Every structure is written in C-alpha cells, then in structure tokens.
Length: 260
Image (cartoon, rainbow, N blue to C red):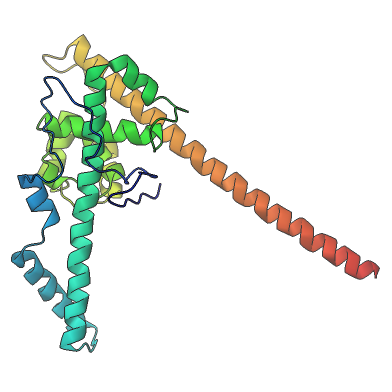
C-alpha cells in the first residue's frame, strides 16, 4: 500500500493526517499535542541537526570518491539540502502514522463499540482502510506502554507494525540484534519472527487474559493480512482483464485485416 500525506488539506490517504480534529479525551494518558505547540518528539523527528548533516556530507564524500563522480561545491550543497529534506520528511511520516494511532486510541476510550463500527471493514467514515487503523492503533499502544521508543520506530507503519506485534521474547531478541531502529527493513523483522516461533508451554504467570490478548492480536494481524492479499488479488484481476481486452482488440483487428 502506497502512502502519501500532505499538510493542511483534507486527508485522502492513510498518511494524510495531521493533529487537527483529535477528539477530546477525558482522562487520556496519551499526550495530546496541539498545533503550534512543540514537544521533544517533534524537535527530535523534524529537525536534522548539524551532526546528522555532517554524517550525510561524509557519506556523500565516500560515494563521490569511490565511484569517481565529479560534483561541484554548489551542486554538492544542493544535493545535501535535498538529502536533509528527505530525512526530515521521513520523520514527519513516522510522526503522522503514530498520531493517527493515538487518535484511534482516543476514540476507542470514548466508546469501544463506536470504535469498532468506525473501523469495521467497509465503513466510510475514515479516509483510509480498516487495516491501516488496526496497525496504527497497535503501534500507538506499544509506544504508550513503553515497549518501543517512538524515536526507534521505522519510517513506514507497515514495518513498525511488525515490531508492535512481537511478543516479549521476540522483542527482546530484536533489541539485542539491533533490529529496533528507524532504518530496519520489514524483511529483517519477518525473518526474525519466523525464526523465533517456537511452540512452548505456558510461561510462568501467563493468564487467560494475556492469552486472549495475544489471540486478539493474531486475529487482527490475520484480518489485515487477508485484506491486503484480497486487495492485491483484485489488482491482478483488473490488470489481467485490461490485458485480455487489449488482446481481443488486437485479434479483432488482425482478423479484419486478413479478411480484407
């Protein structure tokens, strides 16, 4: 799923979300950052400091030298400016999907029944698919619980969701292997999950409630996976139908030409 977002306009896709329109919460432990205010996350995510700029400059120098690429100082300066902007944009994407999840959490705390209706498959009130809601809410939950630091979240919500749905053992292993970081790939996380799936007896202190929570998370992941698979199948069907239609046109033209 390709995700784009743009500030200060009506959201049309999953990432086109800002802090506008957040529902008021009663005793909501999720911090509600209003437009115009600043917090440590925004300062850390949106600004690329001098150290990061220096790292970009050093890495660019290595590339230019290794590949014998000639670039004037003015050109290099413009390239660095664009790379800095890319880093800033990625940080805003991460901020956006996390805020999306926090908004959904606030709605669920107002009314879980209403939340279920708003996020059910086929509902039209949200400007994105219900699978996005499932994933972004789950990410916000693990950040709020302190299981994952938001500064360590990957730049895409689909990759962050892989971290958010790890059990405690797998998450500890991911931290040990340095896989909880902004530039981690989804493939790395999926591989780790597969390798760590071992059937074990109930852990000490495991309760029916914790097992039910795990079952619910797996069911949500299954539903999201099936929805994405169905969407891909529909894309393939449309592409095949378009190609078959073009083939029929070509065959009809060939037939008419041979008959003439």
